Image (cartoon, rainbow, N blue to C red):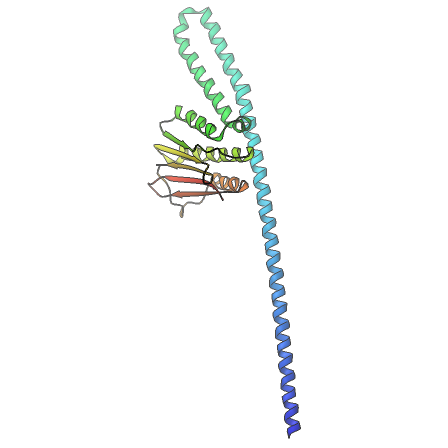
Length: 255
């Protein structure tokens, strides 16, 4: 009997060892599989982020090239045609003195148009933007918009210098322009206030008192998505706060 008990106990022990080893092997195999799946998912995510970044950079470069072409065409083609028209009017004035008063009004309108075209051309030119201080470039754009708008613009710029690379400056300026464009198109605002801070960290705030919207009900527009991707390229975050009837605030800040 003791021998039989010994054999049974030994059998049970062997079975327990086998089950334990099988369980351990299964656990290690499952863990290895999970680790492999997780690593694969991380690699896929990294590749997707790299693709998104490359795609965004390509889009930004394409947009900048398009804006540069428009700026050049406005300056060279439209500007020259306006100058030619003005020259023809001046010649007509010389030949028909009796029409000088009436034609002077037309000349003034053409001069205003020429100034507007030149101003728009400068605001679209990436080279001119990068040659300026960011605060000054933003002030110039607000002054240009103020001339043709009933909206009141306010701006506050910190005294601390903005230490930005050229590509960072240009992207921030384009985000600023896109945000203003959205305000002018959709917000129905009476006042737009811009704040540009360099310390303790970079921040650009654009706030309007327009109609606002519900962020939970309205999906982001293509322009908003593009602005967010532009911000990510320079290590910034873009936050949007809005409520119906309480205006909208866009904040671009350094992470």
